[in-house]
Image 1: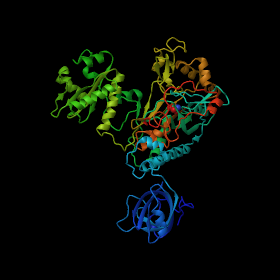
Image 2: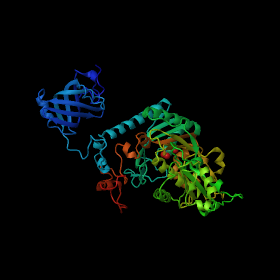
Image 3: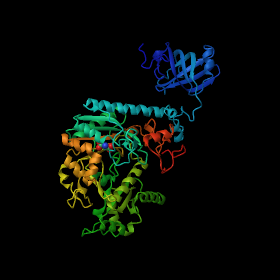
Image 4: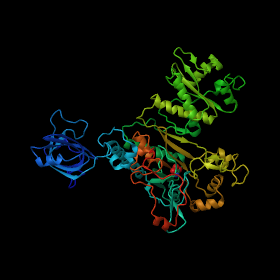
Length: 628
Ligand code: ASP
């Protein structure tokens, strides 16, 4: 008989391995007591480890000593059992367990360690548990089957990622965590230096500059499962430290990076969650402008339609001016704004109350109001705005929106940005509510052609929409100039505002899974871009000296991407919070409830670092703080 991979002096098999074909052999198992049923002369124990559960029977008549021990055990005790594997009697098999055809008839049972009563049920996967308790006793939470499964899923994901990259000739390289600030638009975590008093390291927001320097070093293809640190306010898909699949490639254009990443994603998805179909391969590619226009989002969920429709053409009079008769629409269009709609299928019979709720939601998202037209059963169009529009125009709008009998058309008239954003969010709400989303499907898509910069009015500079090193489309390179000619005096009138980046985001089921770019790899152009981003010549030297210098020594064209592994694992595990796929996550205020971090330093530690707290903004972590 082949020995088990898990055999050791404590066990011949794991708790998930024995089958009917093992009947008759002697086995030793070790694990936790998942459940115990005492029927007097017979005690049944479900013995659990990470691999499964095996039923143990302890018969007082056959093994009085084992029975005496078994009567002392409680749930979560750690025990080791020796016994004979026997087929269960017909009709008593447990089909839900892989080991359900057998049981081990104990000849001896030893308690290796006792356990207090756990603060929550470990053997009831669906029992609701306060999340603060789960985080405080995370080692117990991780014993629960759903969490154990998610850790395994994540391990499988990372394994598949490594495999795919090694096969494609990538080199896995670790970059340091104690570095100099590398801006990704968030606040840095700082680590004071003892050996160089008065100076600090920054924890990497990403290995961005280091991976680019590896390209200058000739590594050609780099990847890393990289820990990143960003001191931001936390949300469901954010944590102060998180893990990225970070990669960079030399001698590539956008298509080359996207082609590799796409094939890697397909391979990794099939290896990790083979049961989940990929909606569209090759992945759809949308420009940023198209995504905003059609879905009101730069991370559209393409598992359902409900596209945004522009109603402006229907609302224009013969002279091209808006003349619908409904002031809100006409004013929005006359002011250069938009009137756009989505169709909620089957909601035509929505009650007053439901409409009010939708309007409330739209207001919450920033709209001034929400108009609606219901297509009634007999085909006539109803809604408070019909009296302004007239029946004909109302019917025309409904037709333009693509609505049919029984549907509800929701309309926002506002600036284009607000109309897109509000309808985009309503679309997501309705998609979920109306069950339009197939939860099982994986829908990946690329978003490309992002604007390079956004104007930062407060600091009077251009702000890189993604990352300060992103390259500009070759045809837009001449736009990287200021209006007044002085490269160090950016203004909102600069042609740079129109430049598009060689930037691509990868989206999965409505989440931004990752983003990357082909980089600027010429020093002069990088300096021009930094100047637009408000960096003086001195600041550039000080912050980006290494990379600027490196570009003087022969930098190859290069580009890459980073994908959020926590998000990817969460989506694979059908979770909406990345905490559910992290072994030891933090609370919303960055606290670790188990280790009780952060905590006050020892006075000697501060003295050694030459530091003194002069005032503390905000309160310290307390165990009763909100978790999510
Ligand atoms: N460093 C970028 C980020 O962390 C990703 C990239 O451009 O490769 O978002």
